[in-house]
Amino acid sequence: MYIPKHFEIKDQDVIYNFIEEYSFATLFSQHKGEPCATHLPLLLNKDEHALYGHFARPNGQWKDADNQLVLVVFQGPHCYISPSWYETTKAVPTWNYVSIHLYGKMEMIADGKIIFDSLNDMVKKYESTDSSYNLNDVDPSFIEGMSKGIVAFKIKITKIEAKAKLSQNHPVERQELIISHLERTTNQDNLQVAALMRKNLQK
Image (cartoon, rainbow, N blue to C red; front, side, top):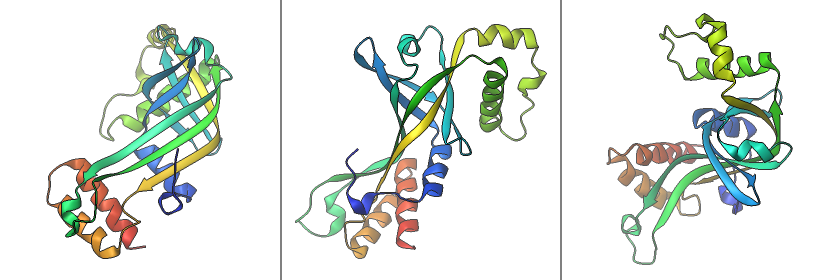
């Protein structure tokens, strides 16, 4: 990913927090000699510096992905930035966004306990705190049967590229104008980008 220095995210905690917040990712690998992508939620294990997830078994991408160097893209909020907000005619439109690219070796998981634990961790992450659903309460034979329909994997992270393009290359006054315009809308991406820009200005 092309990352000018002023857009690069270097703080690992910031990167990890972003991955956990925007955890629905796109996983790219080579399948039958062509690029292939699957959209799926992934869990970050900070201690292992790894990602866990699973394919639906009918999805053929897993069949030749074992031990491949794969790319995972986590895409955060993004929005159009109009040059009309700058109060100058010497400007062009652009797009603000945050994106994290992770590279790593994929390893298929056969161990039943590891598979269940990763599924359980995923349920815990996404179920609301007041939810009555608990994977441990589900009939084990049902879980075993459903588990046959997936292929679990682990990606050991080898490289991270992290970018936050938030108009840092513009004067502070111009950044404040952009924030002001974004905050006037109800679009959630616009509001999230505005919040990130404001946080960046306060550093």
